[in-house]
Image (cartoon, rainbow, N blue to C red; front, side):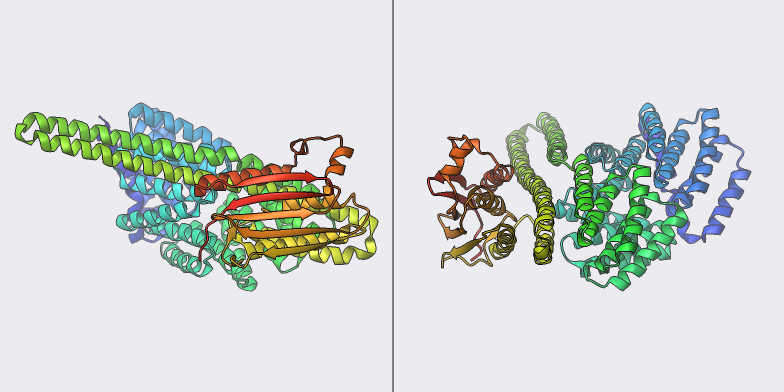
Length: 637
């Protein structure tokens, strides 16, 4: 029964491959004539769904929706479940493109039930992919992952190469959202290979766009531009406005990374025009935000605010949290640059809340855990299949028994070792994701403290505010640039630390001196450390040690190598144990700091990653405080 249904369903999904031979108007006219001529209701439903599929591909969403609804009405009346399931899928997909996600899910869940009822594996793969994309647009990554994994499972079981390719492409998008760019790149390369085997031009163009986006995240804008230009050429050849709009948008982003802002603006405006024409609200949000970011870089702040507010309002309307987070963050930066620090602080808080709700530690762990689970189940099924196959062989061929036993043992050992390796790889990914989470918690904490400091400084010493703000702007730029990397050179970290200490020294009435001593055996350009690993300890030294001190203080930082550990000692001649006593504390562990807690956790995770245990000690002495930490590092020389 399933084979018969699959034979009925697959042609419905693949009809779109025939459209390239005719012009858009000719193709649609031909479909309309055939629909009017069709005498059987089943044939009419098939043709109506074909027309809806074609119109959705060329981004004529309203027309596509009308054809799909006609197919649905006839299929319901005639109880043609296969056609009805596809009609609901097309209705859901068109409504998704228009940004009405709740209504899209309602239709797609009906399609899901119908496909389950008829046992269509290809239909289940298609619907799960569509639902996953809805949740991806809503930035609900955990649910998107769940549906993409199920889609891949049904696609593999159906042996439908088109469904498999779509699932791989969606996995690439999701890994990119999770900032696992290496895995995203692998998935996108595989997606391109599958699309080329299918000779599906639209899919090939989409794969090039996905690869281009990943190349840009890997800091290679030139490769990104090459892929986006290939995608644009293919999209123009097949007259796919949606992919043309995506390609323009992505080219604008890539040229912005190369600081070619005039060219970037031209591409973004071209993309926005097409997105408005086809009614792609999610894409419009993206264009508004990109234009706002470009005008910010060009220091045209009124225009930047105009586009960012448009993006913010539309993203709220359609429930796009990622768009809200980008707009809030960019508006906060503009307020800071314009001196509206109270507004910047408020917007930064709103951005942090939105981002935390869509991209938190729970999702990062879940994406690794669910993927491991799926891979494990798949390998277990493969092992069972091989065991059954070889047991039959043993019964039929007695003299090959010993060979069969060796083969089974070898297969079990092979898959067991592969499963262990796969698990280690995902544990490695999970540790990296945990480090990213800790860093993303530290950055807002640091920025929030700095914004509070700016307000206090302007209130208390307005004559010195300009000097302070100039250094603060440089510091914020450094922190934002380094936040994209899990590791930076020790040299860059020390530059950031020095700038931070210069700023804090200006804030204190009596100021302080600092000294950094590095062992001769260390090349600061080669040793890699996590960004902002020193800042929390130095912040504590300044505000808990030196600030209460009536005279000018001093901070000394010693850096050396100790058994593949980077040992860093931070010593201040502040109040030390006296300050502890004044606070009524007797144990250093009682004086817990948010930043210090995160530093300890980051060192612990690096230790697990590199199989070398570091440490972090905080010692309060009568006349000074000493931080002694050892960070596991890879030495490249």
